[in-house]
Length: 402
Image (cartoon, rainbow, N blue to C red; front, side, top):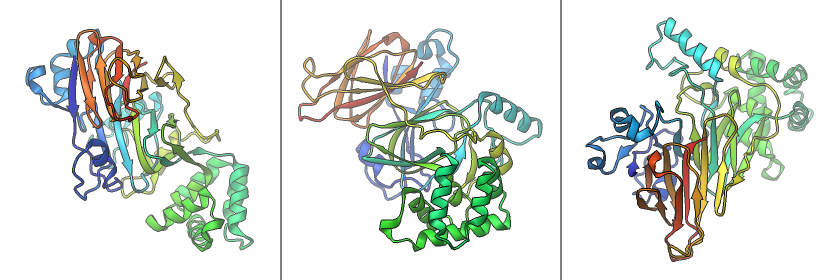
């Protein structure tokens, strides 16, 4: 079965006013639209377009709970992923997510302490990890992700300091390592706060042509979150610019923050976020430091693996989900260069450009740009064909198991 689904975008303050409505072909309301959730997460389960197809169930979650064998197939107990369209017009919080072991321990600890699930100070809303990947849809998708080598940061800190000595304490802490530096910054020692102000001042004074990606980030974050330790933490991180179609993977312990752009995000269906700044939401420095991976890694770009003609597969090892991107060239059905999506269990598809036809073992459906559907396991592998005749490169993303 191909079951049409939709949802109301989440109106977080950092969301873009235009990007999601333009993708979905909806009216721009003037309010921010940050995330469109496609899945069965209780925080915002997808709405069923035609409830009569599934016995009157209004949401995908309702139907899965009522008829799990039909909706999920086999012995599955839930949907192993949450698919999102994410549109950032301002920085998200500086954050990281726990490992499976950390999530189980943290959830049990807060339960034992009597912290209510809906308490804003609660860190662990469930006992699960939250690995995630994002593929850029906009021409540029800007993010901070992962710690870069200390020597790279030291060189940039010294250049920004320009002999003033105002960033001297930061230089000293960096020589003791990333963990020492982040702990000093995040615990808001007076000397750390003085460095945050100094870095903000120095970056603001640089001419535009003298800014690097990281010092430009310092300047921009200082305008939005003056005095926040995350301003200087950003100097320790990779500034990542994804072109349309490029992706990155954010494993447990990875410190990151999306800055600007439209993307398709796929993650485990968890809501466990440890924040470290750049937000008015709850920040728990102690817990953040417990889960952070302080190892300097290369920028976490994720290259797709070709999976047949017209099909790219984004599938980090061991996460239990994969994101397929299938493209066609705009010729009529039967002539277009679609592809075959090899699916593992229940899946969700969203068309992001043009028009496509999905053909499964028992039925078929047409998706126009902005439309989405849930695919039951009995459809097996799905053939994707481009329907449009105007030369548009039709594109559909399908989230599935792995």
